[in-house]
Image 1: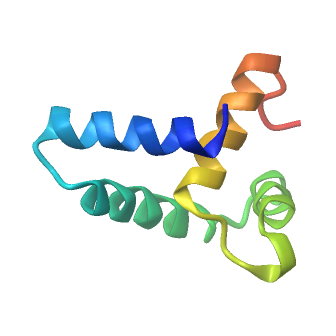
Image 2 (image 1 turned 180 degrees about the vertical axis):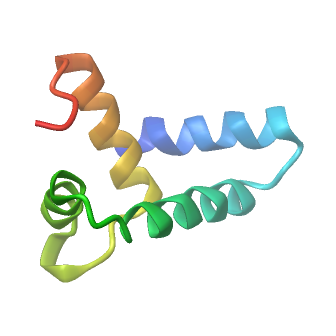
Length: 77
């Protein structure tokens, strides 16, 4: 999945839920922020790998990464 497909998915969700794309992205970002607080070593390694140059990953980054993992069946390894 490319970032453009993630953006399209956010647009589809926004329409379905009667929200703006900004609201959808904000909700996903809040979930990412909470998940990044996990003390689980596997989770911490995942977020470290996904955080480029110390920057927090965007909702698009996370959705694209998860989609690739699901497609390749490499969930959190």
